[in-house]
Image (cartoon, rainbow, N blue to C red; front, side, top):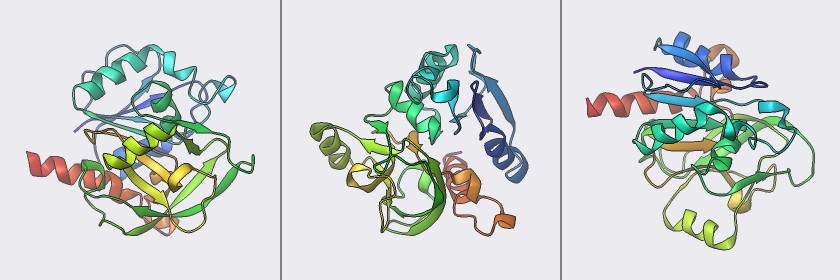
Length: 224
């Protein structure tokens, strides 16, 4: 399996993700500059956190028009795997690969902390290593992480079980329905505000994030 980590001007978590996939999991990983137009060699595309284009217009709004994003859309529509983390989640909503939007945190402050999450489902490839209703802890670091959607979109997300992670206990940013991560209806595209790559190395004290990547690998190995 080959991973690709997108790199936009302003990305700052790209190397963190590559450290997990390449160094911890030992899998082929290449950094994909945002102007590339051929990613057919990749099995999994990860859009990392950071401040693509400085977030000068709206988080993810400019990155959505980078040449590589049309390839990411094609990649997702072909059933291949896409993960958007933090700013990457914002890019996925801007690109229309996931519904809803990420808006300013409820208290208008940037949040850098660790957040407990409830795993809503473990029947998609990304969450195979978790159990349903399990509580895990992942770091968060964002200023615009409040998930918002209109009533009909929110109802559709709930009706089709597209909510993958919810904030447990205190809601740090005011996200509707405590939503921390969602997937598309097929389950191959996942967007989440918390950072699994920052909870993947035992030297950091906890590895709840590593299981996200291990779950995907385990599912694909079972298919093969």
